Image (cartoon, rainbow, N blue to C red):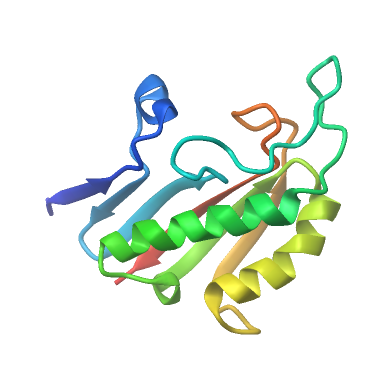
Length: 142
């Protein structure tokens, strides 16, 4: 069995939930779902109604952009880049808002008009943090 290496950001939910942000095993890097954290808080949290439901997904692009930035930071710690990503899954509360933001954000993150990555966009009813709109999970090969 090949050795594993892990990376974290040191955010509170890593310890409370019990996970790492990324694991490298052999030539494969597995990234946990990346959110819009800046090291201490989630950026662009969506407004919630009295029942805790999102009332406006207008910050989808901002959250998505930060999630891709965080993925890039993690990949670089392993000597990899977004060019090494082979698969991604985007989990979103609002598919229409995610689809509208995903094209420009993903193309910028991958640095090309035709990102060479297998991608799946999944609509979900809830994510881990109230006001969180999107989470992006990736697999990279180096």
